[in-house]
Image (cartoon, rainbow, N blue to C red; front, side, top):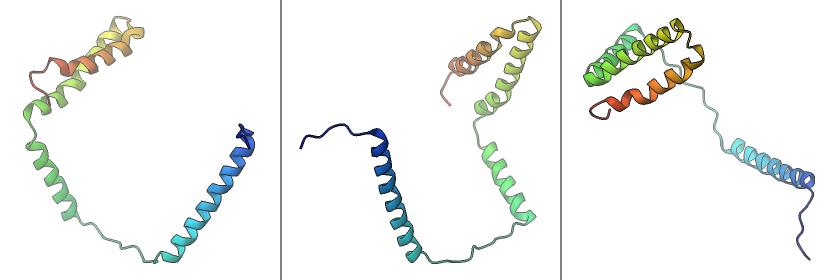
Length: 113
């Protein structure tokens, strides 16, 4: 018998039925194998929060100074560009100006991040 292209609606119904059968079989198998345990609740104290903040500050201080410079300078330069764009009535060019700055800003750096 020759294979022909079937009706898309009947194909969809047939495959959805097969998917439903597979899902119900998988869910039944998982339901038999799963062991129900109560979740473990851990409490946080202020010492835990202070320790996490201290570790984050240590990570930040170990960062290269050029990355910190970029973190501080790029947003300020972007805001200055927005200010110039709004002051000079360049509102239609504001998005391309910001997008170009964000793309071309890192190119002028001496070494990669």
